[in-house]
Image (cartoon, rainbow, N blue to C red):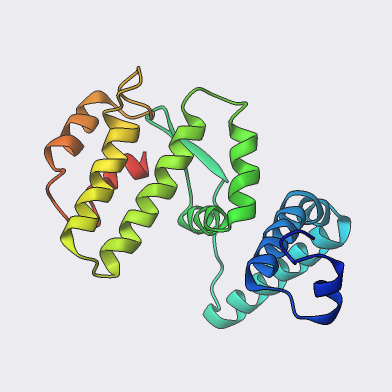
Amino acid sequence: MMLAGGWGKLLHDRLPLIVITEIQKYVRMRIEKKWLPLYLATEEFRERRKRKSQMKDVVEDVLFQTNKKKLGVWKQLDSKWITSSKEIIAFRKALLNSVTASQFQRFICLKGDFLENGLLFWQEVHKYKELCHSHCDESTIQNKITAIINCFINSSIPPALQIDIPPEQAEKIIERRRDLGPYVFREAEVS
């Protein structure tokens, strides 16, 4: 009310832009923190997702007219867990949604030491790749590389390596920090 100038101004004039943006911020936070998670947990949402998934499968089968061989969801290979490319793409899309990513972040923060840092690293690398593809100036891209390395790979806060990658891989990234392409962090991102 103070930002709006009191009840008299509020009733007779339009709200100032700063008040509208402040209201939008609080409404968005309320929706993202309370109402969206409640909706995502409803049976109606699960049914809708299930129907969309079934419809998509039917359309793919009709279009490609092939018997797709269903692979196991997760397979172990050399003590690493892998999944199909379809599931990897779905997981990446989920992480690009800010609400889903924050829910996933809350979930994994309880599961392990570097899992949350790994998610934050992946998100920052994704932003870096978007910068590369948008043809930003080299100094901006180099600053982003330096920020990612200083935060996750060569941190001033012990331990220096804040993500779960082999030290050799971290050294390779530090050596290639002057490369400006979108694939500087490729191996670390995949692992």
